[in-house]
Length: 350
Image (cartoon, rainbow, N blue to C red; front, side, top):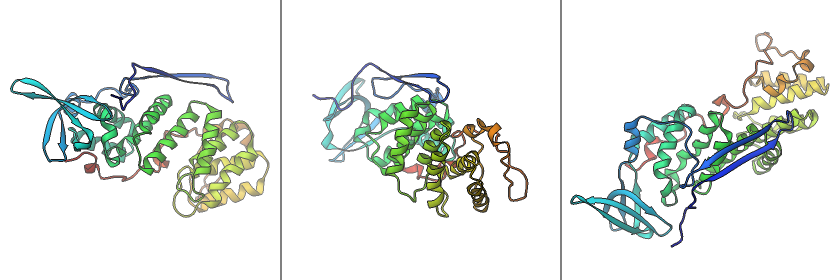
């Protein structure tokens, strides 16, 4: 019988490259478990919650009969449960086509994780998401899309604890099972950010260009342009960087666009570095008029000596600190996923 999920002891996934800027050699290793998921990194959750997630599951058949037990086996044709009856164990196997619904325990834990994500607390949510998916991943092929959408935030949670290699491993594990358009967009964005944070510049540049080509001109994010322009800026290709970030600046409307503030910072710094004073002043005035914050990015701070004459005043006439280093990604306020994104009560069947 053909197995639906890959069966292997472990896979050592390596991400290595030479940075175009500092020639540092990066090697991140992620152990992939037999389930196909990378080994968890978020640490344990409360024992009672962990045990709640691993209570028996319930299978509801098309004939409305229900069976409750622990998962004993899964392939692309059948799901097997181990049931306790009359003091002994019984193994029952159910054809996939006869199963109407699979119910998981741990609704309270899933709602708690969803609330953390909704509040932007990705680091706190990471061990919860890992514990939940660890109990459910083998049955992912048989779950409807809306019951899996929560886990699109798992790679982002890994990224929030500075582990981009883990984020990429989660993206690869989840991509075949998350079919909603928003899910795939989130996975794509996190993967792009992760490759950039790993300093895999060639891969990040290619993916950023693909991102730009695949995204509508009037989109809700400028992530692809920001990543590509950042790479160009680090290579001191300032004219190219300016051209890249002008696209979202020009075509963005009144609706907030994530990473647009990052693009303005790169555009203004690039204009200054190539001596285009008129373009620089127009961008500064427009940024202030639109109420967009300056982002003091690390890549800009690296050119501090060449930007010594750049002065930007806020709406009150106070000089803005241009070089207070802020990590490009740790602040989640620019992430479009923040805010109410779903009804947590719909994550797990009642």
